[in-house]
Image 1 (cartoon, rainbow, N blue to C red):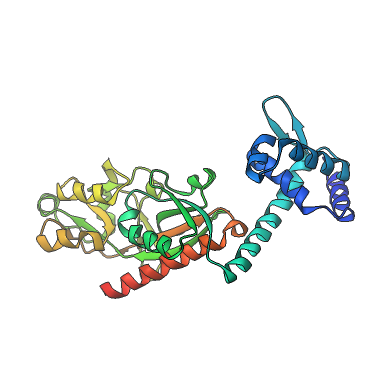
Image 2 (cartoon, rainbow, N blue to C red):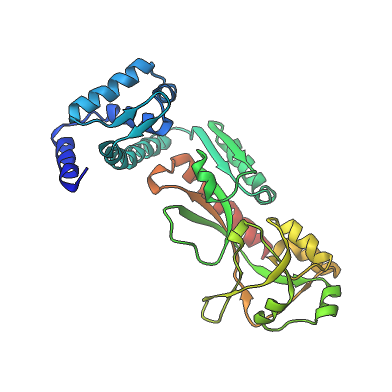
Length: 318
């Protein structure tokens, strides 16, 4: 379809006061990738779903879906309608939920995921939130991590991040900032000496991430707050702060970790903080969702609640 055809379709849509409910059925078919799945999602007979889509195609005068025995594929006209209609329908749904939430309790499912270490920090907060809002149905998976999980029909992903965020269609909200430090076992420092410059770390054994934080180089902040990246060598790569600390205790390498979890190790002398010319970039705890229009009132309420409780914890620990 060329640009003239696109403009023609837009003109048809504008001239025909489309029934939003019919458009909603079409969007559900695309999301579910089947008429049967859309019928289940909308609690409608499959025959009604088919009639809605056929009626919409007649109204617009274009074919929206190409059907086969196994797959549904959108035509270019169908893609255009979906791309324009999906954000609008999501926005209307969120508005409806926001208006309803003013008068009644939060209700409905929240599907979320988080890395395996986050429950230690967030478990009491999630339990309290669900206790305060008995109409919320929480489903939390600790196996799925990162923004990739948002493609797995997940409403919210909790993730750790260090440094600048990449440009992305993913919307993130900072929930907490966790100061970080570089630590090492006394035995390792006795063997390697104590580094004073971050560039010295490039030739020293270090503990790095496997895929968390995208396996990026270590990141520090200069006096202006700009990110300075330092590539380090590692034979011990893990996606867990606890595993990193365990490796550091054994003298496997230097580790850059959140400051709070290793206070006992520092007090007992099992680890030592390494003071360098630059300070490590803090670890950020983020809530991520795929599109600003698709975040529901209950997800927003959960994010605000997590942020509030973490701020309270931080103020008590200072």
